Length: 171
Image (cartoon, rainbow, N blue to C red):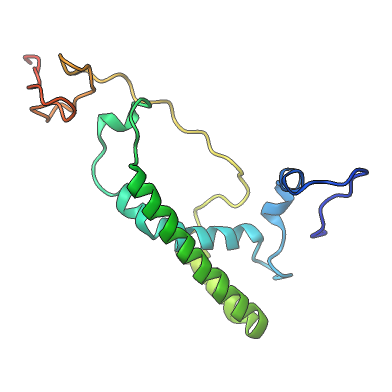
């Protein structure tokens, strides 16, 4: 397997290069000639350490709300998105810094980190898939606000959007 993208007859722009090298081969390519670890294993380790175990986990915590399945509503505020991106970028910069230090000086230590994360946190994660289909949206809620038509949870006594008292049907 070659690290170099397939040669084309015409010069490629950077965006073309990124698009044409987004292949299945990238998912299975060995990590610096390591016999067991792949670039996907490294990507999964980076994802869990940099993205998943950060502010995103706080956003993910809590109970489901019917508002979350309505695409008309935002699921994240601008302030939350800003915090997520700043903190994720800072964590990624730290990972890349550590990666550079270790791969230059102690590559086996870096491979051990990636391997430990793989077997501890990401062993059930996809190692080849490049996309994932989401399940169909949940069925329409049985209860809607009489004033603004927002989806209401059965336990809610008031609409969180307009404050109207929820009219729960009799059992």
